[in-house]
Image (cartoon, rainbow, N blue to C red; front, top):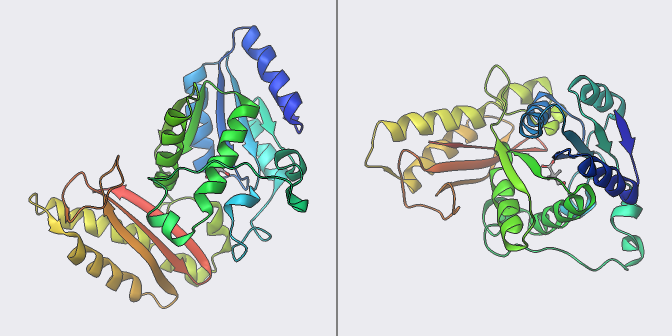
Length: 288
Ligand code: PAF
């Protein structure tokens, strides 16, 4: 396994691989890797085959964090990430620096961003207004660095995957996008690097996201004609309010591919929610 830090070196590595007939699979991450990331790596390997080149990027992208968010304290553990990647059969870790990714940004001389104007507006985009501009920009840049045939994203960030899919289509990136299922802890909590912030008491309250999704699914499946979105949101908001350290940011019921909110929630509708557990903001979603 190689660690590549420079963008030009990354591009050269990929050009050589492609010349020798390899396909490139890519998993973009912000590090602090866990089993969920490793399942994305397994998907990438499956798509490009044993002979393919699997690249994982580790880059905590500053432009997707608002000044009030957790950029500085975002968890990092490069040694462990390296071990996990090696064990998972990753070929290359791409580890770019801020000055390579955003040259001149510190002195106001970086000025090109990618903005998706439709799917990025609600939910995460409403709560974190500059988030998807940062995500779309860094993912476009990472695609230009790694030049993958296949890129794998996690379903936990459902809206992110939808925004990236739209960007890939709109900007003609010749990349196949794969969205891999969310991996969960035994009690249903979606795996996330941010779970590391939770205290023991918060960790048990954090299952309220998954409990809410399971309850919503049962309610909706019992009424195939649908449940008014407002009623469902009220029930779930109560469940969240019952946890002493939980605070609801949003719940949304929407069409799974267009992300357009629905008035009646039916089997097959999608539900997403964001909840603060103490200071940690967690998200989850599921098809009902
Ligand atoms: O999902 C993430 O970890 C990040 O948003 C991504 C896609 C690596 C971009 O920084």
